[in-house]
Amino acid sequence: MTHVSSEISTEKKGRLLIIDDESELREVLIALLEDTTGDICQAANGAEGIQMLQNEKFDAVLSDEKMPKKSGLDVLKWMRENNINTPFIIHTGYGQKEMVQEAQRLGVFAFIDKPWNEHHLIQTVQKALQSGQESRKP
Image 1 (cartoon, rainbow, N blue to C red):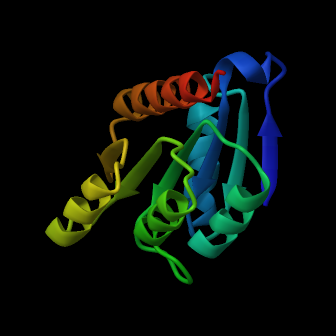
Image 2 (image 1 turned 60 degrees about the vertical axis):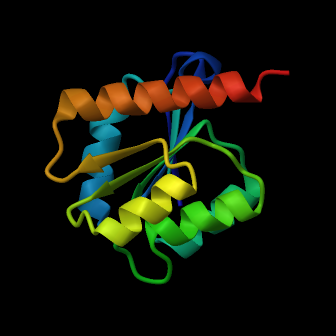
Image 3 (image 1 turned 30 degrees about the horizontal axis):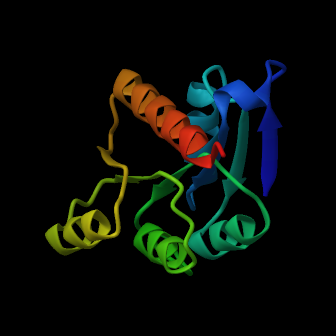
């Protein structure tokens, strides 16, 4: 579990949790998103992501779907069962119809296919962070 903070106020840009079992991919995502995100935390699998979500608040979650221990969909299910309505983005190279339908039923914020378009990824994460921040306002 690692935290990356930018010097600009984290309040305005939001907190993002990246869950992915590929450390190189997490590093690429952090490099891509650190300028537009206030605070980025990372988890190496779904179980670790759930552990972080139990202890911390995030404005958005960007998760891989296929991971050991718990999938992205498992994390999304756990969040909804625990009334955590944080915007959830799934990035996947496998767009299985059943997973997509279940994720939509659970209120997934967006899907991003791999390989992703960097501009689209950044925009989607920014919208999710903004949405998450607005829903946390009193």
